[in-house]
Amino acid sequence: MTELTKAPLPAVQMVRDTADIGKQVRAHRKQQGLRIDDAAALNGVSVDLLSRLENGAGGVRTDKLLAVLDGLGLTLVIAPKDHDFLKRLPQDTL
Image (cartoon, rainbow, N blue to C red; front, side, top):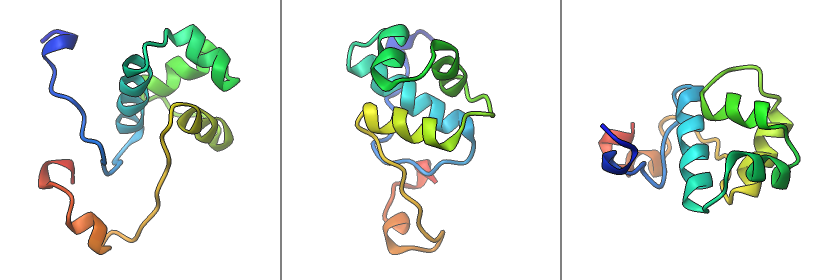
């Protein structure tokens, strides 16, 4: 399956592992037309770190993760698993 034929990621997604975060980061970077080196520079991180993040590798410091998310217009939300908001998400994102 090519990049163009992949289904778009959900706008709101529960994160089960670092790969979920990486897919969202990569999708938003590309949606903004940014090359990985440009996005890394804009967010004050190395290309290596951004690449590891996009590929779901562990070992990315929380402050760097939050900086990248903020720089790409994303945010991290923490909620109880049984919160009403999460119950309203489409089931394929859970």
